Image (cartoon, rainbow, N blue to C red; front, side, top):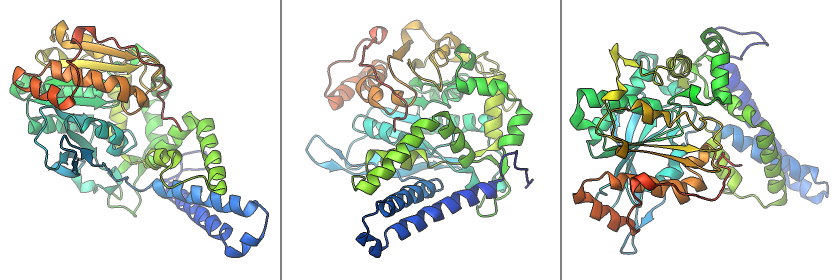
Length: 450
């Protein structure tokens, strides 16, 4: 592993050492501040020291732990609780196809595949999305693995491999599948659908919903697209790519480390995060914080980051953002052109947030124009007023407005045999006609609020 100077990015092991040291310092401060004899002192410094230690230890410990799904049971029509079992359907080296099986419930006519992003966080980032869909759908998710845990002998994993995984997963689930791709995988889910349309039309999904994804990054500039255009590929590789340390099974694999990604995430909203942590320290000192309060619930997930293979990160930047291969319909997989105009029978919906600063409005809806072979009555777009990036798939905007529209879209494209059953399960009015879906929800800041 090359050792960089102080002006460069620290090595993988050095970053882990910094994280481990901060976790240890937090544990030490917590223990010292909680020493029983200090209870006799009226000096608030000891309470603050212990509170700072608890917040710091928890924060740095979460950075190397994969969160559990922790999906709660759902209530059935008979008043009984149905336990949720998380079961792998297909297990592959870089990611699994996982099903959330609802015990003692017949399969729902709505089969949904959630395509989780591989952009630094685990698929558990979609936990609330899964929970919101389970009462009405059979839900599957792409559960990507942490690259640091994958031996070098398993080979590479870039955006072409990612797309091939999606093709395999959709084939496994069958043509009645409704694919919902969230954020980063939106252009690759579109490519996977085009591959199936040309090579195996009978295996195409019934619907494809793209939520806040960079199908055409040049359609609207954001800090993310500006960064991608400003940096050369050589600079990105030199500054951000590291070799996994000997502590993990993937020792020697070149990755974009999760800790480096987390640093970038926090830097984008440093003031907001700093304020959140300071407030939590005072809440701990006052005794008003709890194990599952709003702060801990959010940051337990936000701080849990995973390494991304170097080839996936670099190929995403170069081919999706710089070369615009999807946006210009020039994408290839294993040397074979992927023609988006081949998609003709799949209904497509795009969802964007008006205040999305990650994938701005215009980037995702570009998919509809690219899919010129799809009839106009099978294409729909929705722009959510007041919503940021997180809000369009997991926040209030998703729960109150977008989720019902997505379910209506799925129902509108079901065959007649399944429509009645789906409506009965939802216990909702008949779906709004696809062509007239134009909700006006209350304004909301859909960022990952802290």
